[in-house]
Length: 373
Image (cartoon, rainbow, N blue to C red; front, side, top):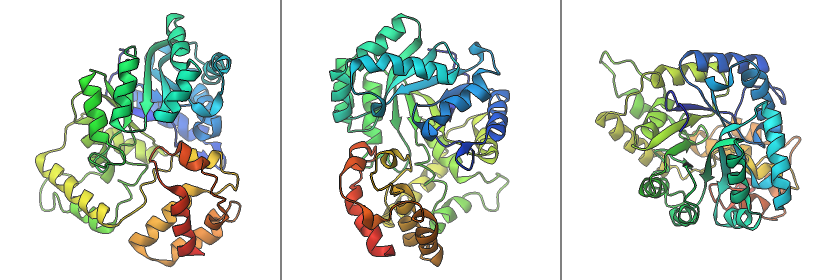
C-alpha cells in the first residue's frame, strides 16, 4: 500500500463553499494545514460538489505539492456511464480534472447488489484492473453500501480488490439496515484493509440532541482532562478497530480541520468510560426515531421535481428533537423556495435506487409533507 502517514483522511465531498462555488482560499488553507500536520490522504469522486471537488483539488493540492507527498483516491460512479466504452474516457477526464497522471486508489463507487450487477455487465472491474496494469492507478478497491452478504459475494468474485471503503460509525455499528459491524467483519475475513466513510454519520453525531450532548459533557467534569468535541468520539471510535487503514472526515471549514487534527495527530482509542458513554448516546438517539439520512445528496441529482430531500429530512429531524418554529421557517422560506416541496414528489423512486442508507424516501416525504404542509 502507499505510504499512509496517519489513519485520518480528508474527505472532499463537503468542501467550504462561497455560494455555489468552492471557496478556494479556505480550501487551500485547509489543504496546507492538513499536510503541515503530517496527514496526506485525500478522497474525492467525480460527482462530489456537483463535479467541483476534483477541480478544486487540482487548484489547491495537485498543482501545489509534489506528487509523492500526497495520496489521492478517486472513484468510478454509476451515474456517469452506461456502457463499457464510456468508462475509459470518463476515467481520463477524472485524471485531467484532478491534474494527476495517476490515482493512488481507484474505487468502484457505492457498490450494492444492483450497482454491482451493472458494473459487471459493463466490465467496470476488468477495465479498472487494466488501468492498474497501465500504471494509471496504484491500488484497486470498492466503496460499499449494502448488506454484508453482498460484500462477501463481491470479494469472493474479485479477489483482486485490495481495499474496501464502508460506512462505519458507532450508531450504525449494529444497525440492521447498514450492518457496519458485519461488513467490517467480512473485510477482516478476507484480510482487506478498511477505509471508513461517514464516521460522524453526515454530521448527525456532531449535532447531537441536548440529552446526548450532556452524556459526553459530563464525562470529565471536575477532572483535569480537557473536554473534546463530539466529533472526536465518533472518529476515534472508528479509528480504534484493527484493520482500519483510514478514517475520512468531510471537513467544510478550518475550525473542523483544527478540531479533528487536535485528537488525530496523536491518536488514542476510546477508553472504557468513553465507550460506555457512546453506548448511552446510541440509546438516546435511537429513542428519537430520527431519519438516518447522512446528506450525501445522491438522491437530489436525479429528482425530476428538484426536491432538496436531505434538507427536508433535516427539518423533520430537528423538529422531532427541538420542536421550535425555526424548522417551519427553514422548510417554507429556505429549502422549498427554489426547490420542490415534499408534496411535489411524483414517487418515481429514482432517489431510493441510489440511497446508500436504503431509506424509504417516498414514504418519508409523505411524513415531511404531513408535518410541514
